[in-house]
Length: 571
Image (cartoon, rainbow, N blue to C red; front, side):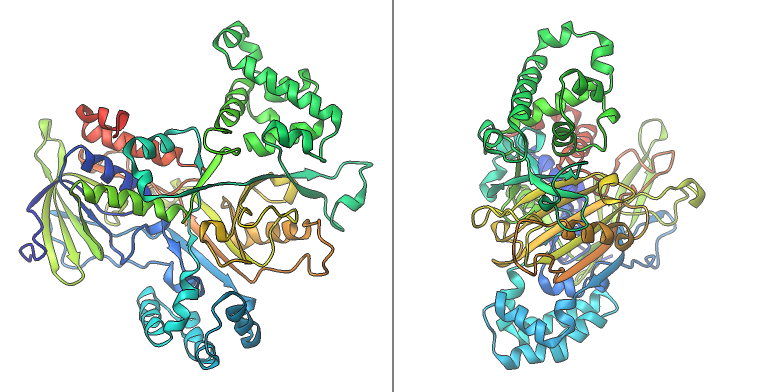
């Protein structure tokens, strides 16, 4: 083992092996509590499955995103072998805009800074085939390095894309926003509101067909979130507006402690569908509430108590920072990772990229013979092998040599994801410039999918792409491959687009990236490997960061229960 070539200390209070969002949040909290932190990442960029892609990364995604990690060699007999997680699989890219040199050149010149013709020709004749045919992430990095050096005039266009692998929102009332404010991590961030909450409105018997795209059974509408929106809405009738305002008053009264205590248990535990019927809500209003606010498939799948709490929280979030309940960092979710890492570094954390943990030494040295991780063996890109001791290890690594569940005991735990680039918004009713950010929940029966699909659309306003383009994210619980799960949904959503007279209102995407993202925990054994080994879970299927914050808090409190006030009064 090399002797601290980077002047690393022999021992750290906490070693964190990944720069995903949960790990970064843990590292920030531990650093703020005054502990010594060594924060590692096996790759050359922060974020892992929370990272952002540039345009050329997308082109090379089939090779770039799939990480193959062979078992480390020469693992000491008293150590447990580890490998970084391989969370992404079944990557498939459809890029018609690049398949033809003419359309590709038009794309670069329309949305870029019009690089010289010889640069564009060389890109399509030399570098694009190399990126598309690359077989490994190492090969991709070599091609990208050459591309950035030899065709530097394309760098600005490449950098104008920042596309999250795992897009999320910040709910205006929640623990993530409280942590950002109390810790003052907001000093590193800027935010924008999600301008539109969309919902699919089903075509009902007798409804005029000219309000729907030909052959479509639904259309997208902008959900009114404040009183002004309700009164100006052309989607709901005057009677429905009155019913909706009465229902919102009912929600406000029901949220009071006295009103809730007076309700009987059957009233609160009954399906929400019965509550809606009692309030004489029309089918259209029921769909608006269930699909856009509660984001559940049907009103009978949630009880009244939970539904009222969610709607009340939704209403309370409106107006805290904006006239919509959701916020998003101006540079996407990847910027949250960067912000927490900066915060942690200010309080003394040491950061090392390209540093792979190859094995752990676990000793029976705790009280009652409890197993504890005593040291980790690292392989650093330039410095070689190093051994560092720690009191706690926070990791998302896998343990390939440790017996866990048998394959027959495991079920599919994954998300199907798609990222689409288009010249058009998913909803034709455009807002003001730089405000085309939208969130949408698609129930399975509406689009013929096997599970509910979440959709998020953004544009230049979050620096996801150049002006004039839209980036659309789709995800759902995986049942088949991402292409099989999501491509039919995307096609139906595009065909439902109405509100424009142009002939190209159903223009297909410029490119689409599909992949499967595992949500399986890195260790599923019945017994802990070590008492001071703390596992980080992959992103789960949610819109906000509640699961991330909950897991980070649980890990911090388990490591340092006496420091619980650090999270409560993080300032």
